[in-house]
Image (tube, rainbow, N blue to C red):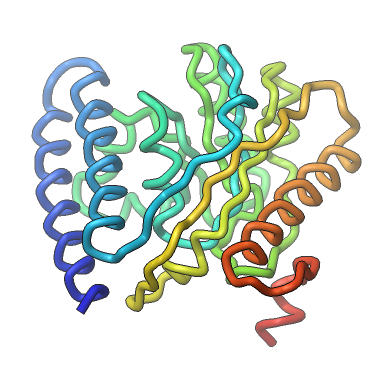
Length: 250
């Protein structure tokens, strides 16, 4: 019943706020759309608690900086975006171009200042990421990116992509790693929800100037280690290191 009630709330909120945002996208400026989406994510976090029994706990606020940064986040669930976006007034988020196949979504993403890249990757995707991230950096906006580029089951990870390092270097922006265990309660794209306390944890910033390979290893180790500790804490199971996704899923 919890999962069904949340699904009903999810689609009601999504349709209602999407229509509101699409209407606001016809107005000049970006503020109306961004304000609506901010309210949407906060209502969704409330719905997670009231209907699915998933309470959000945020840790590590002492690591937040009073300047634009890059949030590099673990991605275990469709709920990840709601949880982190709800904590700020505005974020420029990186997303795949698959969203643009939906009617009027391209207009909405442009109003939000989203950084849309080709899901297939390659040179053009890297070029688009650099160009659109530069717009966000110039406007003084923080950027949200999922460096693995995929959803992953709790306890697994994929190769961390270098786009986050290029943004850190090019725009001289610190990177704040973000760990989570939300996938325990809202599994990837699954319908079933489990009640409990999901944690979103901001970790110690990584400052610009680090070599690419060292940076990616440091970023991966911080995110995966802390995410695994959150999983162990929630499940009561001993800590075990994260595994590559193909070692678990094949």
